[in-house]
Image 1 (cartoon, rainbow, N blue to C red):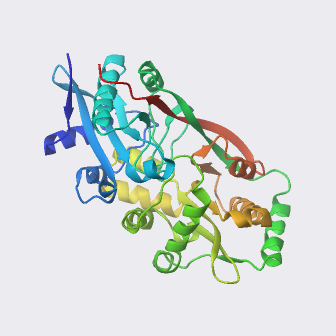
Image 2: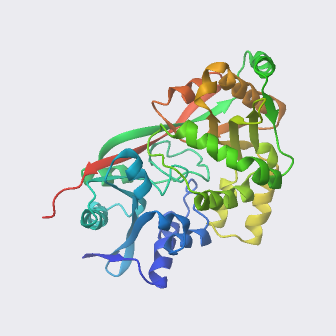
Image 3: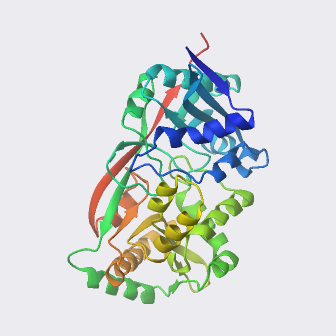
Length: 376
């Protein structure tokens, strides 16, 4: 018999956070979240809990945890897009359609009671979090910013009546075999032509004090038209900055300013530290810190986190400037390649950037949706 229990106690919280570590034990592709940070979602003063309704549930079979799920009502996203949606995230289950159905049914009931009309996911609190179900690329390395899942998850989700809403693509980008030097030269000429300045901070402190607010301003403008985005308040931004300071080096944020000292574009990358996190099972141990610091200092792969260009500068060659800067990074360093994060399959502005590299599409992720039915 399957029982669904809402997470309330400390013991249940530990079971919720620990379950995927057990489910994916020994899996060479799964990269966990930082174990201790996952408990933040249960805190009433967690920044997102002030703008979202959230509930977490466990599935138990014969007294053993066999699944989990979180439901999120992102009020600001619903207001922005004129929707009444509940999101599901942190969905993990054994390969059992009945377990998955019981979890989805419980979230759907909770959302129906709150007046929601649509059920979508996997989506987190914001579009800067792990989202989308992996449906292609199960044998590919994952970035820390991504969520791995077993192939059978798609079957469990579709069996409940979910259908595709949107897909994201991911690529590995390599230095082009031809025109690499030419692209770098064009980039420099365009900077000069439009009176733009390439800026790189000397420290993370400088980034936080002088540039980070402008980065999020560009993000808000450049990404506002894309699927699932919503405004971020200052407390949420501060929460992301805390994580940013842990992972990013000053040279990993490339910024372009105009003559009025306004940021018009940026590229944010992360040294690939997913292997260190995977080997530690998300726990911050001395062995993890040693491996993490090594991989951060000597990365062979960089995760291409975000590229933002103000819309009014897209037609002024700024995109070509960013391409040249990234190509130069690949040819001037020991990097093997750039690993992109999620790009919507119809985000042609970003996909056109990738055409200038030797590339390989290696992963695809999907968000699903269904109507919330009337209670039986």
